[in-house]
Image 1: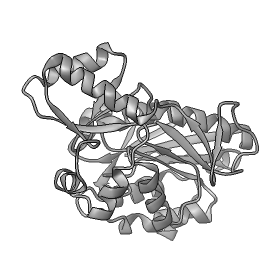
Image 2: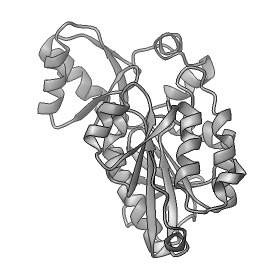
Image 3: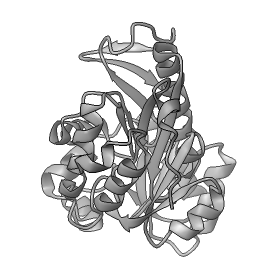
Length: 284
């Protein structure tokens, strides 16, 4: 159920959409985003930035950005870093780096350190695990249903390690990760370990940069799983795309709206109901 924004208020405010990919813009089973494309086009026509925020790697995100025609900043590997097209903002924090075509703000530790942390926690608890670092491309395909090409892109990690718990004492492993000051969470198919960064930190950082560029902004967050809770809470208008987890997530985010439809249809619904222009609905 949605409450539409006041269109008079919207004229004074720059809207920014932060969106997860899997299970929202992308169908979790078919990996299609076709149903969402009219809404993506509507955002483009109205100059509303769409910031993709996902557990996916930079190469994966680049593939999807090319697929939907997106040229805005994006957040990789659960907040490990913000990648911005070079010169997108004329001002950046002193910690920002320039690499190739991007200005980058990093929050995560290097990938090898994250892999080592998982190995140490596994050894401490005698709980065997297997992470992407140990998996072949074929292993990743079997565990995720990704195509070979997308599994290759998913393996090119920089900040975050997806892993499968193979032992019976998984809770002890996760507690050991906590004790080491690292962060873990359960994704749609696998667990992930990070150095402690989060999507929320990256979203807040980008929101500040957009606010500096446009003075007044309102942030819209779209997600569907536990890994999205922190960044949805960091946005002004959180939206949960319907899934079997939606009711539980709504308890964690009391001000969130829930779409009627799952996947890309729900994502389109979220955009249609939230972007504050009275004529928008007629364009879908």
